[in-house]
Length: 139
Figure 1: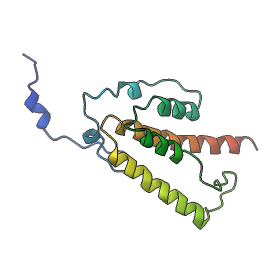
Figure 2: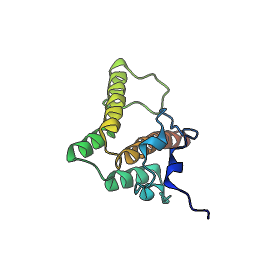
Figure 3: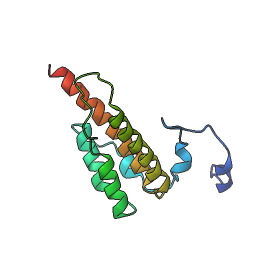
């Protein structure tokens, strides 16, 4: 019979790694209900997708949710998307602090929330790229 026994799960296969070098498979238990994320919904813009993810993410705590919302705010003063000017030391400091806080949140998140956070950070990057493109095409 073609029935698989449960012991076959122990076989080590190629590791799938995301852009931060995290082993994706270890973080996402295969039977986890991440189907909602996988379900490719059609969003008009990355901003819509980001709003959807933040609204539906099963945050572990209210504090975690407010941290995520805070991290999604632009830094102050915001980076000028129109020019290719390098960020000021103050802006760089804020960006680095945000990056560290994001990593911290990922580490402390439960397995059910972690894939959501990764997706939120990924879509946040897409929002930035999308907004820059909008500015470039508006000239």
